[in-house]
Length: 427
Ligand SMILES: [Mn+2]
Image 1: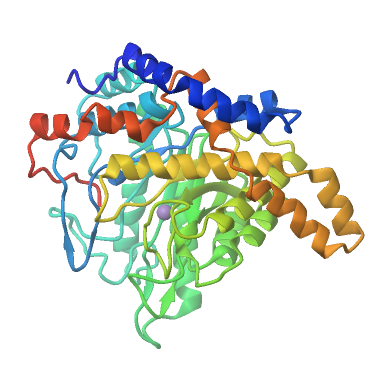
Image 2: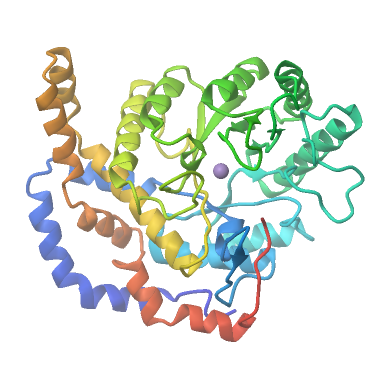
């Protein structure tokens, strides 16, 4: 697996030939940014976890078009994330999905991840489909199920996921339930909520004291009439009733069209209940497109609230919330897609750090609407890419990760090593 380790000298060589142009752009940009050293530090520290299921081509119910060289094992998934991290130094964690990513040997998996400088982010359970040897079906839900024995199976699975996570050094469990109903009358909403809450409480009791549980919501799909954790209000209810270790997780693609996600973020932060984020982008629903590819302004506005809200509560940007990408689709090389997503997130974060908070606050207090917009858009329209690239360079990454990825023919090497017909598991 030699190709997996992009040697340092290759990155340095690449950066050297691109440095003159980069430095020229950077100098022009930072001339007007007094605290740019401070911003660079924040950018260097910011890490976005990569989920194991994003490393292969995603599919739709109409088909899947794998691009070749996809990881065939947990070891190869870790190697792929290691490769991303070597290029951008901002992808220093992997998020596993059980049952697909169960390690045969924890010690070896931990050592392998450490070799690439990777931590284990949130563990993800799965009760939204039936596994081949599963005793009972989740066709009519898991934690909401009318049959207590099915609910117990779902609870036990989540507790098993926590146990795998403890062995790997993870500190959180993300629960996304597809539970809900497809037709009016199918479900008693109140009973479904209560049963789900009781099931989550059993999982909560199995959490180690230093763990968090994230309750992820989704407006619709695969259920199309009701979802039992359907929006941030419902997730907030569960998280509040569960206790101090429970938080709401916001996935950008899990809202109804035009939802004001930045306002949701602000209020959840205010209540101390925002636990984490799943980044992606969409035109219609849960499209799983590259972060920032459709609505970069929305991504910026969300980061604007994140930075404002985290600073108001004196939260550590890098540690106190869980940052992850959750996207996988059909038409791009998954690794290039992930590099683009991380870049888009870093850009939005950098722009949010540029917002003149004092001036914005003053404009708000004076009802100066036009001024408030000017302030926000001054930050958003700043081309911060040289700043993000500089942070990457200082951290040991490549000035242009995708350009280097292409010039090293990484995908072709992966296909040579793993074959052209591989299909990554995880979803
Ligand atoms: Mn998600």
